Length: 266
Image: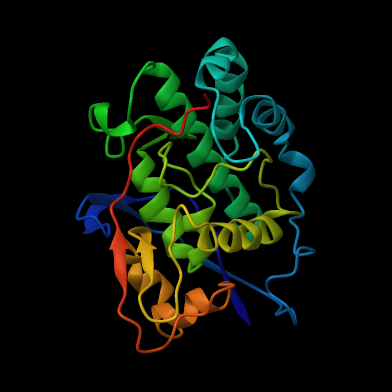
């Protein structure tokens, strides 16, 4: 039997720390079982609740205000703030239940994180960096049902506990060095395909990672969250699954300083 995280928003306690040393809420979720499938990453692993979750309004906003390279028109988002707020409120009203599939949960929480990050920026716009905003990740800024959450809670307390390292390339922190924000909303139908695409694009983006056989320079994402990428092998093993330029097992890895400047469309 395969266990799926049925992320019910129940008892939350500050008891663990993120890769950057920040306290986060630990979301305690019961487990439910589902018959194993031959391919757990299949894009056909959709939820019976798919018809109840409509991400089309978010998809429309992304297609208008996010460029193909991931740069964001925050001024444009500001002009459509009401539509963004309506989508965020819609997400808040859809509390996950234990009959949601893993794909539905992943899509839901990725969209929750990305939409609320955009809201954080436009609520404080103009700003040069998300880090110029007071307590951007730890302050409770969003609701799901009756529970208050921070962005760190969603990332570290929920998404990272799904044992899916590709989420790091799906969520966006509104900064130049982040994996790009896709201009397509995640859904239960496309989440596996889009996470795979985002991971491959980020790893092979020469502005984010400098790949070479012996002296690669990697994004600090791989340093901060190394444990997420090494559950089934080394960090190099993980990267080489996607890298067009393979890294040698005995390579000397260095890291590129993170650029927190806003990923704003010129």
